[in-house]
Image (cartoon, rainbow, N blue to C red; front, side):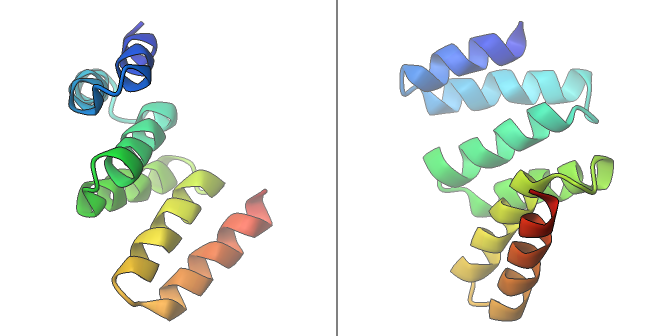
Amino acid sequence: MLLKMASIYKKSNEFQMAANVLETAYNIENSNTQVLIQLALLYAKNLNQWKKAKKYAEQALDFDPYCSKACFILAEYYELIGEIEKTKWYLKRGKRMN
């Protein structure tokens, strides 16, 4: 239910509201990889809050070590801060999982 609500807010370009709903879902079940990835994507792509995106992507990998989306988000984060070796590492890891 909360994921659906967040999706509606996101489609309406109400990104902060979508983030609030997803944060509520996260507080209910913080091991839900789908919620973690949606939060990471929202913070990275729509709210430009890369440190939060990194946090949620890392948590997603903690719960699902084969989550390629989390790897690609982390690769983008490390590219933005200029850590090219980590960028390459996460890209390779993500591609192996796809």
